[in-house]
Figure 1 (tube, rainbow, N blue to C red):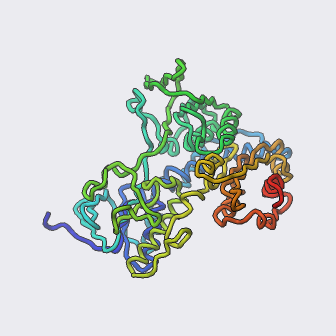
Figure 2 (cartoon, rainbow, N blue to C red):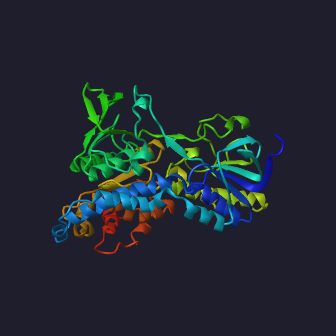
Figure 3 (spheres, helix red, strand yellow):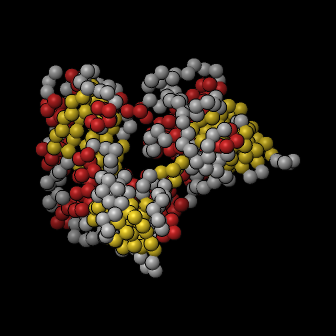
Length: 470
């Protein structure tokens, strides 16, 4: 082992995705030194294979459909979607899978970068190739997650697409089978159906199962309107790749064939080969953390983003990263730690206040607990539903606007526990709902948050009216 270079930093971060970048940035702003270790592109999954390219793939067809829903604009839109132009725009968003810009940001932020595969080789120690890095205060694991390939006979041998392949495809297949019913499945179904691909979604149960039931139902209707086939409560029994197509045998005895098959059945943590066994943890496992993102049983090991399995969303990962970077700096500098609920150094929102948008057509925007989750958590609730299409702002927004809003109220405290909106462009309504849930704004105060007329935000007044004045 002689001759190996040892370098010491206050904080070592494994993974240069959005989470790793933010942890290191906050630690440096707190007066510490930090190094990020990255074996792929600096900027991570979100920048190159997830949020950004997927939204770029979805947006153009969404805009086209939106224009067609408004007379006057509809007559002006006479052409079809230019798929190559959409793919070219996607390539711009991913910087053509070149990370020079992100590397420049890391350097400008005063963060060191080591390229290569990092493994934990001891307490506060990470080895990258022949270089040993030592942390004075903390090691942070933010290595993210990979697509899970389920044990369906023949699936692995069929060389299936995973989410990365779907978001980085250079050409569009004529037909695509999608195994799964979650967010990735329905978003990629929407994108490819918008390109004119013959899409078949095969879901073992319903769509978007963790959301309000009407969300999955309306997204299924939306996909069918786009020309996709949606098979619910259907299992894929086997998969076989022939010369020019993939054949899937289904639980109802039927089979379908497609040019490509996309697997979107969940995620698995990227912790299989990062040296967890050297510190008594199980390789390939999710990492259990407290609300300051400290891995339980350690005083120096943190985990942020997908690997801790709290909320697998870029924005929640970045929120965790800010808390973790700040608390590492506070602990290192002997400063007070603000770890009471909703304090500076905790990711309290991960538990019951996670906002999420599913960019299908219709969109699904949700925050907090669903009616079922609130009931399971022991709250005494009242659920209020309202058709968004009955709001003046929605009628102006698009002819024949269809969508649903649901508000879940904690009857004892008279605050909002959760809100779900389904409909075109409802993502713009979400931050108001998030503030209501996180701020625990009493319903009698919400009556004074007057929505501007005629906008879609009028839905708030209608939900409150339906609930009734206190």
